[in-house]
Image (tube, rainbow, N blue to C red; front, side, top):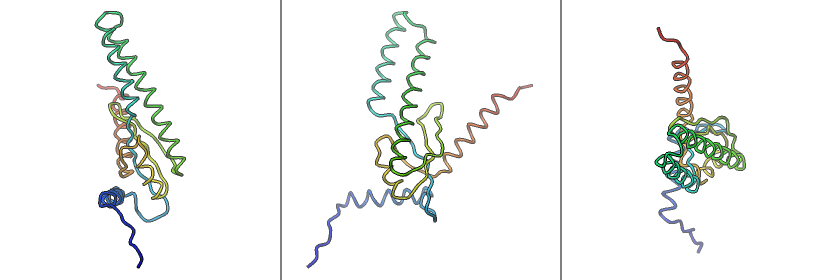
Length: 160
């Protein structure tokens, strides 16, 4: 008798969920290359570093040793550095899996997104990377890009 390989129900549902998620996101359209929007998240260490910095700056602000503007600037700088490191790490991980990072965008009050392309299996593997919180349709990336372009146009146009 041949034995049937045993697969746990949880593992089967997880694999099915990932496949259905990618299919629903339009990542499994016909063709060899797939495109997807990857949502990124700072590591717990980076989040802790940011929180520690915020607490330190609050103390300095209360003591009067720093202005609100200086505190805000320091927090923005640290957040920018951590976000840049996150995008660099996520890009390196994507490329190591054979994915191409076509573009990246960081919303003003959100986590960065990458527009990635590659094989289905590489996209599935990329979902297992700690800093990647999810994949969705490439349309979402393009919509956000258009919104940012429109916002930039509105701020540069003179009123009156």
